[in-house]
Amino acid sequence: MDTEHFWALIEEARAAAPDPSDADDVADRAAALLAARGPQQILRAQQVLWDLMAASYQAPLWAAAYLINGGCSDDGFEYFRGWLITQGRATFEQVVADTDRLAEVPAVRAAAAEGAELECEEALGIAWEAYRSATGSDLPPDSFTITYPALDPAGAATIDDPAGTAAALPRLARLYDE
Image (cartoon, rainbow, N blue to C red):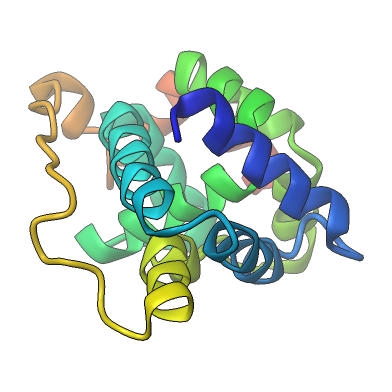
């Protein structure tokens, strides 16, 4: 399992979901699909997932999660990035490259209109659930490594600062002002 295959797995899960914006359903379907691929593939998928989590550990994205969800703890930021992974590769890569593009994502627009939060803790457990299903045991504790980059201090200061967020993410801020 490499990054390409991981994203193909997520896309297959999204295609099978009656509502691909239902992140929990996509995560459950991805876990079921992954379980059929065997323990070694599952272990590799776990590392890919956490590499994506590290790649998305960025202050602008945390500020966006804070705005969208009305606050965002450390765990909340992980769950938000889990949700982002379930939205598929194109959305993930576009948003990681330009966080303000979240304002274009239909699920974000719907969440803004409904006052809904965007999180998916289940996405972080895709490999855990798949491994348990495939082997009957827990994923080995040393099955992945993760090293988060340091947050840019200037960007980190905007995480819970509405004016800073509005300046850094104007389209998203406007969406949540409406």
